[in-house]
Length: 344
Image (cartoon, rainbow, N blue to C red; front, side):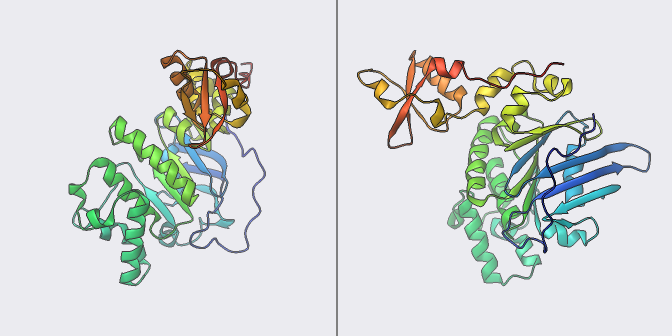
């Protein structure tokens, strides 16, 4: 089914966003048709708010990577408009556009003959930054992604692990303080343990920088974990649903989405739902109870339930790292009132 954006387009800005500003993105009737008649993306409308992390997901060949590459015009759209901060970027210089947008790809794409410091400073150098400022920015970004510049700046890509190279790729994408990031399956080339760690660090980083991000993945669990909203695409780049992860899992908008998220979506709902203050009983209910496990506020309900089951406890202490905020019962976790699935 074709879909149009579900919310009014944001008002156009008088000027393009400057470095460091998170810019909203609006795709209007975006289409990509190749000379042989193949339609990769038929008529896509999608909105991404400033500072939002939007995940594009769908089956292989649905056009999600094509959409990403049209946004920075590595693939030219056949028709439609791409509004970045209210400015239609389909008519301007694509090279200048790419210098305003960070791009992170699956295999990183670092220059093997350049040091990590030089790799991170690629775009600032192209923009004509002074050499000292480039070095300082590279060091700042390496610190931000958890790599000590004193240790890693002079190394070469082959001297780093896959996870470390991926962090460098993120640092390079952020170097010129872009208005948005595009990420094409950025964590899929690393092993599952490193991937989970990278996802955690990426969420921490996004909490600090709050960039507008469009991320493509084929991994539904990754989409649920990372996305502020998830856009599910079907063949031809058709937008089936664009909503927060809990809504995609709890109220699939079409039979296609219901089938795509699968029969185990109830488990994924728990993984997508954090422990929040409104779920807690007063801390006084813990008085006199021994052997109570602890979980942190914001932990997923899936992980909280795992703690309760592992310790055979009926209630857990919820903390903010310092104070006890209340109690979370096993019964409360299992009785969360999710939206009902729509009738087919």
